[in-house]
Length: 201
Figure 1 (cartoon, helix red, strand yellow):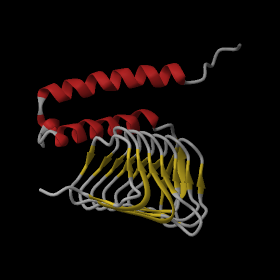
Figure 2 (tube, helix red, strand yellow; figure 1 turned 45 degrees about the vertical axis):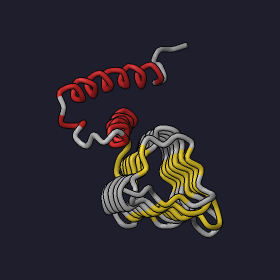
Figure 3 (tube, one colour; figure 1 turned 90 degrees about the vertical axis):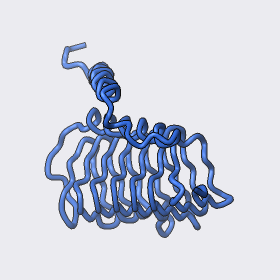
Figure 4 (cartoon, helix red, strand yellow; figure 1 turned 180 degrees about the horizontal axis):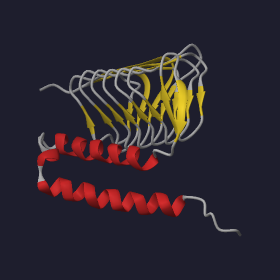
């Protein structure tokens, strides 16, 4: 099996897994613990693409830069199957649903979910903790999705680490299910500790 195509300008800063079928060109930066899955294409000819720590770029995702806008994927994001990102900024701990398209100049606030099939037109700004649906995409309700989205990112990071060792069945094991339960509790405590207190100062 040959390795992925990484152009000479691509910076792999410690990805957990880059699938051999992935093709990355131009000024692309992949941070530690991130994963790039089957048949992903990333092109950064005129600006930058940054894939943040522990983010996962799933099968058949297309990432391109816009006209004067780079593409930035925050830490602990899940960019799910067949998504197109084009010159946009995805905040930390977001989940972008299957087949969604996010266009030039869009900014997605941290802890948000963009539903599958949504289309966000150029310049759309989504506040943190939003759920976005439709074409054109719009906020349908507000909810902090940080915990669920970080847990999904953990799921993919561990899968990436397993794939790197030739283990393609990690998710089916009892040990991993126990690991997910423990991580869910750890993240819940961390998110709760970080939440603003309702008590008067």
